[in-house]
Image 1 (cartoon, one colour):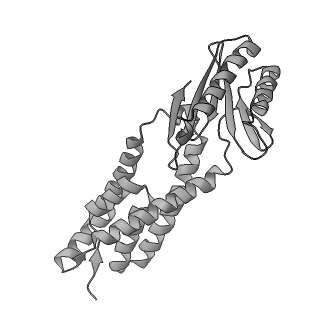
Image 2 (cartoon, rainbow, N blue to C red):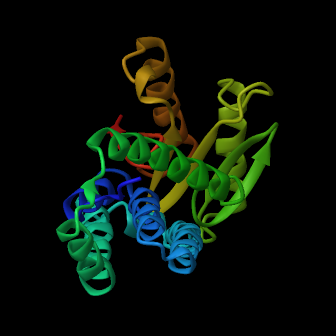
Image 3 (cartoon, rainbow, N blue to C red):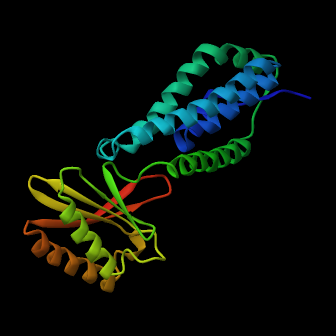
Length: 241
């Protein structure tokens, strides 16, 4: 059977499109085709360990910092790592194999591995996210819902917001909703986690807007509110109310 190897370009593209797992698996396949089983299994294990460690580390970075990092920097980071590895540890063997008659791996195979790798990346992210707090700071848990708040905020104000969230049925027993209360420059900011598909629901928006004004009266302090929606990839979108 003739050897089929994936090129540097194919591997780099998979890294840019879907993170660390697809290029690791393509490099693993290359090592197998080259008859280097030990390096293949080391690559596979290292890829999984790196992926888990990387995403775990990202969960430890404050949200305020992560939100300021452009997404393209992450894809560039993966691409540069793969580029450096391929050029230093694999390029010669692959080029020699092509000169000896090896065939290039199918782009369809790359596409399938890239999609599978993306799914595995998301699975790892979700698995890690289960044990991570949604926001930094203290948390009040009510009926399966969570209100995160800064330590500097008086507990009386926290309880006022909890009471209002319960009376507005945002903190009902069947939801598992999340909100946040921050004190910024002596002003309160309430963040409500609401799926982006509901941002044009006038009933929900009017209810939240009314709650914002009522809470400003309750707090006796300027109060702002924004909505946050988090995508499957972990990217947040915001809307000021």
